[in-house]
Length: 260
Ligand code: NAD
Image (cartoon, rainbow, N blue to C red):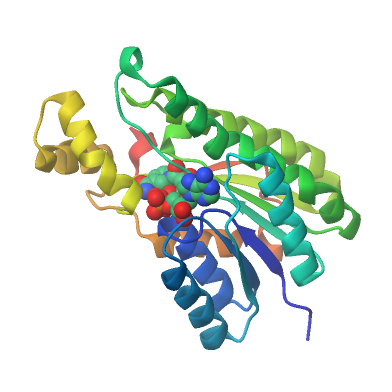
């Protein structure tokens, strides 16, 4: 039996990251969880995945704004599993307000968590992946890595940035069996999106219901939120040999949003 693959998923205590970590565990991968949250809830997720799927799951609560903690997380994963084969840069936050009122520290935090942290994690794994001839780097960008919306200056800047970095990493890994791709989801109903409904209503001067129906689902021709499990399934496929030639891409999974 081939050795199981070992994955690090940043921001995997909630939403999309948790969905990807769950999908990975279901396919037999060992997973390093990361992110904030209630310690008992995180422990329950951790133990549940191990018990249900017979894989090794670890947790490290590194703060993605802190490079030293990020490096320690990656070392922790290497000591736990021996090597890191798959890296998913998923941790992210959002803030919705017009640029003239955008708090400096929020802008910096969004760039740090949604973009710069992926530089530090990728830097830590690239040499090992290249030397072993297999690696998968999956960056959770967004439809906002391809198009913009008002009141999301930091987020759109970070997501366009990570789409660019994905292409460079893909070029550097191409001859070594290391692929790098950005997944670009549309709206997925996670805590990150729930929080921006009232903020978007305020900025646009419309009701929360109008935000959901006209702004969010209005962007998506399917008129449906994207499901976390759909993103997990795509991430799993990108880890297979069948996806070996898919690299440097920004893959929308957005109900048709960027086809407009
Ligand atoms: P979420 O709020 O449910 O989860 C975010 C995760 O990141 C959590 O585990 C949280 O603890 C973690 N996190 C936040 N700050 C952190 C920090 N400083 N250090 C470590 N971990 C931190 O959000 P989500 O919707 O699942 O978002 C996950 C990713 O998907 C983000 O990068 C987001 O931009 C992207 N995305 C989300 C949507 C959507 O509609 N929900 C759409 C496109 C892209």
